Length: 131
Image 1 (tube, helix red, strand yellow):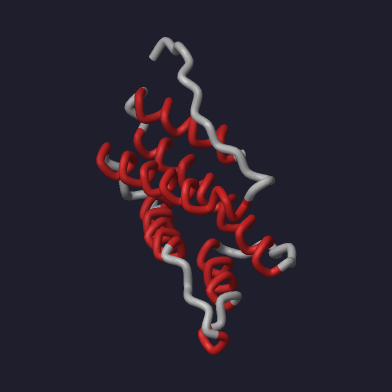
Image 2 (cartoon, rainbow, N blue to C red):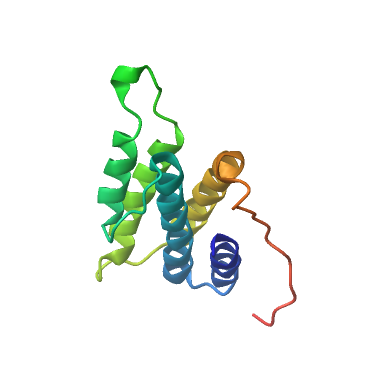
């Protein structure tokens, strides 16, 4: 699902639909967040908000066991803030917002690629479109 969402987000940016692009990129990030939690905890996560899933993932890295919290969780925290902004009906996403969000999500994909393999593959293919 992430590959399809990120391809669609790129197309939306090219079409000038920045709110749509950012929302779609954030959907890909949420999918990554849920799969990361499932792999780390071994449990399916029930229907919860992004923030609740992020909190549950943070709890999966207890500080008392000497584990460090991955930097990628900071990316997810930032993306959660962007998600809240995009969901607000009075806010419009600016081009730099959608592009930054997309790049952060792509960075997250790269960082989690080896951890989520073999269930994860990502590739954006260039296709001709009439935009």
